Image (cartoon, rainbow, N blue to C red; front, side, top):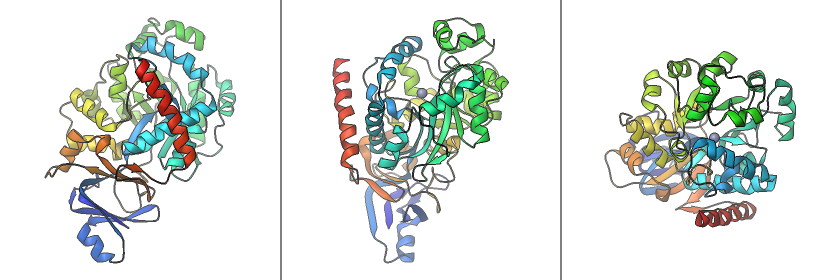
Length: 432
Ligand SMILES: [Zn+2]
């Protein structure tokens, strides 16, 4: 089939006016003008989207889909207060709750044009919801603990899969020690070594709050009591988080999430060693962490991705809203760069750019048709005015998931799971 619009934005090459993408099975086989593709493939069906741009599926590089039921539960507050209020509700969630929440989160992603995630998982529920809805990406199993010998038990408790490639070939697995104040250096190092040895991706929350940087650099501040409880052996290393991770030997190829409070020289360390940084500007604002030093990271040459973080610290899974927050922080970012961050660069940070992030022959057929006004600058129009309500169609792996704004090809079960959470979340939001 051929999917066409007023413009196609391949991302890795110039916008194509009256552009189109040819899909066979689950893959893209060619990209060009509608005229070129129909002439070469006269018997293909044509799905035209007048007034739309066709883009690759967007990459939301940091989510916690299994926590989507917390939408509206915790109001915006400072990070240390918020995280102390998070622990109780998260521990009270059952695997069924995680499954319902992940279904809701996955459908919210599709409605926003997101087809690829870098998700922090607490078991098999989130990747299962992703497989059910056609979302792909990397699912980082969260591990907590102090010493290296806790790792096998931490992985086994949450059914960590024995293979890095699971589900339907669209999903990879990774490992994520939560953060340097909830996991001891022994566990962080063991998780990293295990990931490297068995070819899993590795992610970690890094320098998210000033409280974290104060704790690591000086051993003080509001996270001191949390770390005494969670990682009693913890000794403040006397440096910022990035340098601490580099000293531990776990920065090479790591996916570093947040990176808001950096010490001098740490942006350069990230550029030299990390796979990339996932920025979550609206979550950072929700938790009063302040903006990340986006211009500094950009000028240091760090590869950048965008993430919404969980619905416990955001009210929508909307990458366009994140993009506009990013531009407000760093007005010198071009629309072209922002679109790359939302697509191919995000896929590079997650290590899945061979399959995702651009419209190119051989990649998974993940496409989004987004309504925009008539324009000669489709990338500028998309970045400044894109929104979930303008998403007309979503295709993942060659399967229609959203047709003319409505969900398609979903099991009753996944819709019911999602509806349960939507109701709960709406009640919580009304209460808040
Ligand atoms: Zn997070």
